[in-house]
Length: 71
Image 1 (cartoon, helix red, strand yellow):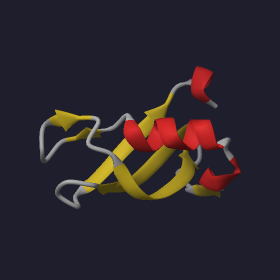
Image 2 (tube, one colour):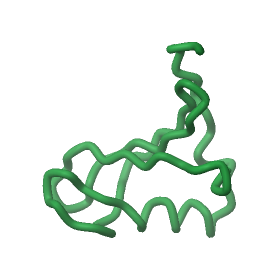
Image 3 (tube, helix red, strand yellow):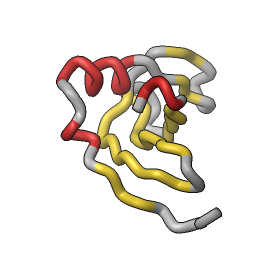
Image 4 (cartoon, one colour):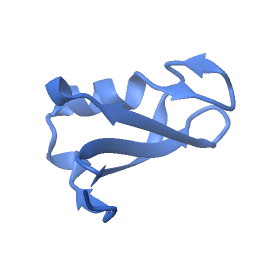
């Protein structure tokens, strides 16, 4: 299993998927759901796809781990 981060193009997703992924978030710092995300970066690590960005409320890091059904 590779520990190499493989960059992916978040913006190649449909606009509907992008909106959903940027909206449905969880922020550990705020302890709230669906605060939103900015500056998304999509990557694959250890056969798992992640979307990483910034919480729209506090600016902290937020991560979304995609399940097989979502990619």
